[in-house]
Length: 286
Image (cartoon, one colour):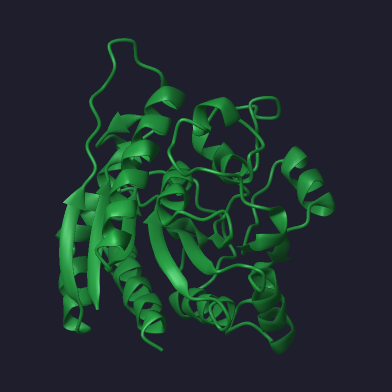
């Protein structure tokens, strides 16, 4: 398979800062070699955005997503598969826009809910709003500047292994239409009941986007970033959950995000990311 690795080296709109160094860290530790070793042809493309004269975190984040959307759209038109390596989860809005359909199902792996909004956040951290942006719960006017962007229905979103939530996020999840799979139900591979839930979450979609914030992994597997919560899941658990979701819905794109080189001292997070990539890409060929 022809895989185009799209690197997005930004964190909170700042190039190669903190988590923005993650994409290059994954490349330096051999992700492309591992994917090629699995039999895929690989090309690497880097997203680069000119910084505005007046800096704005949200403005730059959306500008980055516009560039991501353009690159993903080009990759898909080339009949290749987009594998996005990004500093932040907010690039998901761009990846989904580039896939070109509001009937895309979303499988969201993360320690955190990413479901805050400007009204609920207590930190102001933009990436804590990434899934809310996908759902169209905030920043809608700016997001509409991304060609092809449209909010994703809650019914087409499944979250896996969220475990570090703010109170407003917990309240939203209780009344939302999303499928929510806790870590315990995923460990050792999803149970038949969970597999059925994951299949059902994407049953009405025409394609699937798998978004993997690497801090979904348990710290015993790899230290990924300073925000990583305990009691996570394994590389095999991630791949098994994607397999269940992709049983009835073709996988169209994958993102690996949020690896901080300053935390991944031993390269275990980078190696885990490479194994997730290979395991998930194998599902595209089934």
